Each structure stands twice: as structure tokens, then as C-alpha cells.
Length: 89
Image 1 (cartoon, rainbow, N blue to C red):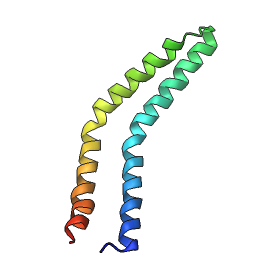
Image 2 (image 1 turned 180 degrees about the vertical axis):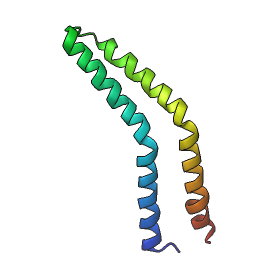
Image 3 (image 1 turned 135 degrees about the horizontal axis):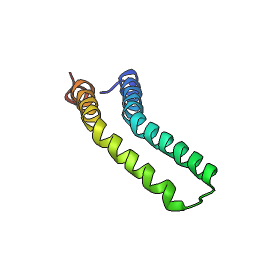
Image 4 (image 1 turned 60 degrees about the horizontal axis):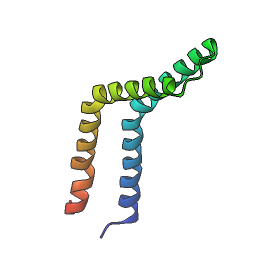
């Protein structure tokens, strides 16, 4: 049976992995949003699609660039922590 310490340690590591893998995408969205917001404030252009499209493009590009890092991190977590816990080792 799974002890509380192992359960909470696995949960803590899973939350940390989720944080680490989401940081590049969230950072890209933040930078794109601030840049477009600053551009809109300076030019008084208040178009809704102007905020959506650059953010979406930045997120897709960063996701494509960091996909191997995210995949490797998740596979390492599952192979090193989840699968051995399920097997009982």
C-alpha cells in the first residue's frame, strides 16, 4: 500500500514538474501581452484581435521550441517516479 509520505512526495514532484513545463509558455504569453498592451497604449489602437493573434503565435512558437524539453521532463518523471511507484519498487 502507498504510504502518505510517498504519495505527498509524488504529488509535490508532479506539481513541480507541471510548474517547470508551463513556465516557458506562460512567460511567452506574458511578454507578448505586455508588448502588445504597451503598443496599444502608445498608439491608441484598441483592436481585440491585435492582442489575441500575437499572443497565440508566441505561445505556439515557444511550445514548438520547448516541446522536446517538456516531453523529456515528463517521461523522466513517469519513468523515475510514477511507474516504479505503481509497480511497487
